[in-house]
Length: 521
Image (tube, rainbow, N blue to C red):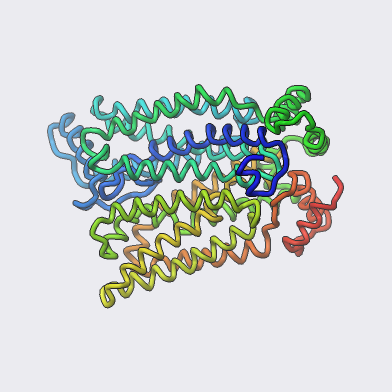
């Protein structure tokens, strides 16, 4: 039994679970690191590539990363037209360069079903690496080519890639994982993202690669990560659920399961997939319009979308977008190191979530995270409002930020990604991921484009808005979200089918749990 399995009290095949962990790490760590490094072209003080997704950054002298890219655009424009660029034109180009990433993510997330239904989960991830190569080349050579257009196109391409990956990876991980480890392994996707953020924060420092000479190399380095994934990913198995349910290749599915589970007895897994396959034959492949029209999917779709919104509208991106500036306002002498400290906390508590998600459950952890973030946001607001009167409030603001990040990674960070796979059967799952991803990326874009203006309007009270949203998501989770821990896909979807059949909008999450566990197909 592996250490990971022991921590969850799981007694299934140990060697197989080790194989699953390796596959997950290969699939998501490279993708997560590459996503973040590619996406963060320029942002705020010294960090340069610090988690910038679709936000128009104010142009100040302290915004080193912004100044570097603005200088590049200015010089390129002058070489072409022999006159300096106007502030209006510079702002327009900068705004497009920054926001185009999220636009690409929106388009990519909505295209997930087109790939996974035709090419499968693993092969779709392999194919998506082509976009990473293209983006790395465009962005890495943009300075040599004296073309800010290449930078913009590169950001759009990597946005496409990232949007696709946020659907491919959680879907694949959910389908290859044993039920007892599904949540823990699903958290690896988020772990890859936060490790990418931390690497970007460190290597994006001005003293390392976040400077005028080396920023193209930092972006071009992503080519290596994509290449490594292309070499290692074929060693991972295809999704057994895809092989059996979508391709009707029972022998191949059984062989894959034996490798994944580390045992020759996979009869229970095969039986569960066959039951789901029979159910899918009655419900057929579900398109996005059908997903919205069918009352059968109304409740799980609502849950999936709201949980995605709870991630992006929680305020976490606002904290990371403006963390350096927040630390400066709090009086921290070296805010860049405090920002990196937040990245370390981000990573550490994702690991904590990985080890407790199968014990505490998705619903409980998500509610704990939302409540903790709401309290932290209130403390952050109080500290920022009283900073001029009470200098020690700077310490409270730092603690509040770290706590905010920690609670985010306990629940709202990792859970919305993998729970979508748990709420839907094989037929509607690709379309559900497309809709959920679209919701996530759209909310990301809205927060990025509006936060600075709301901040100017509300001042230190801006996080009160996020507090209200967090409390709303907490109430929604309590009343609407069922616990999926330790339950098969079939048990979960059976609960929703029974609810839809009885018009059970009044069913509590506990009632959904019992329905899913006991209901026949």
